[in-house]
Image (cartoon, rainbow, N blue to C red; front, side, top):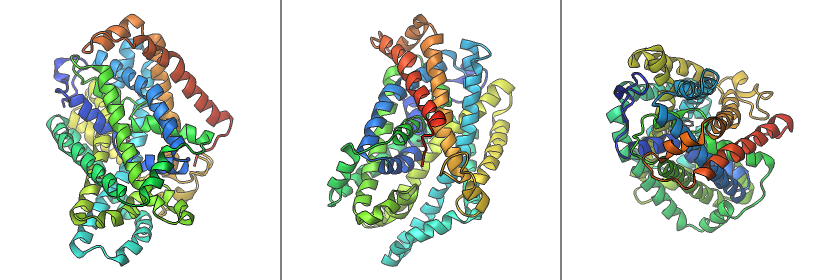
Length: 469
Ligand code: PHE
């Protein structure tokens, strides 16, 4: 992938190779959102009902907005700020700014959770060497809680993860990430497939499928979370897809690429959920609540399942390594948006921009890292901002996923739906695709359905007091 910056639109900026866009965009989309967030959100919001709303949100909001972002990016070959300025003037460039701010916030806290995978790769290597005993299994949960409360480790791993991200961005996203993604994404997919197959041999598999796919009860909060999660998981609403679109070749099809990325991302989220739900349904009903809570399963119950497998000693560390890489391809896309702006618009050198932005994001993430128990104030005093999500980390996540990304998506939909002429969008979307018969449908979704649905959601949260968490 060529992300060499330079002036927007010039040859020096480069383009992705064949499949490069899909790989990079799927790398951005597939991450902790799929493996860590989606399963627990689905679990606490009635399973099948949540999944159904989520699928509808991906089809009616996610796919059209992803196409809109890619189209804006590809037609201007620019970073989000410049892209909106070029096509829409000074005021619209604020949408690009909003994206950059949102990216900064998400990257700061996302890197903290991503850092946990480093600890777990280490832990698994030790377990693989010494054997994973019943005693280990019994205290894996309390160990995880103790780990969360270790401020020093949280900050250290967050720092290491930011350094890894910055390292890739500095030393040529070009060869590095494309090569890495090509191997690791399929590997992650295979391990997930294997785990699904193992899950299928247990007696809790059918109950898990029922819970996951038969609609249960969902409340307003669940609907809102499903929509927020769709934006988060598809990397929409903050310019990541726009930026990757700016490196996309004009010979490639926007609708087909977007559909592929949406499909892959959803598939991975569903596979992760099948695995986690099978584990949850395997424990007695009165203990399930505990397992459905936030981050717990991925880091506490999964190790046991992995070590029960024939090749568990190899699979367990590999699994966490791949989760870490999935997170890395997401943090790379977040940092790339920020860095590309400093390079394109301020004329900074790539290395200087990467180090500066990397350090700033690291600093911004420290309060999140300390909000899992190590600092009382950061852990429990933010309730007024995000009802019941009382920690600094939860508050950032809540604001980003449920407000900033949807607002970014809303404005992008209005921009491409209303502001850009149909003649222009049709010509752009047909470039590399051929006649696009669904253009009118796409426009209609962007004009009415996306803004309507998102505005309704924001209204419900702000004025009707629908609460999260
Ligand atoms: N989509 C990523 C995930 O699911 C997170 C992300 C959000 C990445 C926004 C880039 C931009 O983990």
